[in-house]
Image (cartoon, rainbow, N blue to C red; front, top):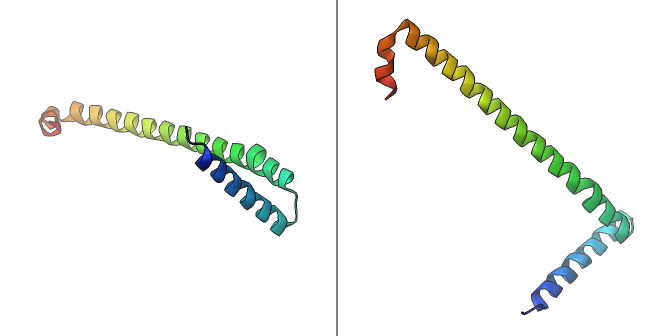
Length: 84
């Protein structure tokens, strides 16, 4: 296959990292450690935690609404015809 675009993309990314590292005054290796061993795992962990929290919260809301529906149907059995 044509590997030129992969090599060019890699070189382009490395050049960006070298320039960023030079501008903020750290080495290329230190910037790699900060990005790929610290920043990305932390962002990934926060993202996974937020997803689990939102899934848990949405499930909790569904349970609360279904309990409210059961109570409403107990008090007024004709309400079932409205839910279709």
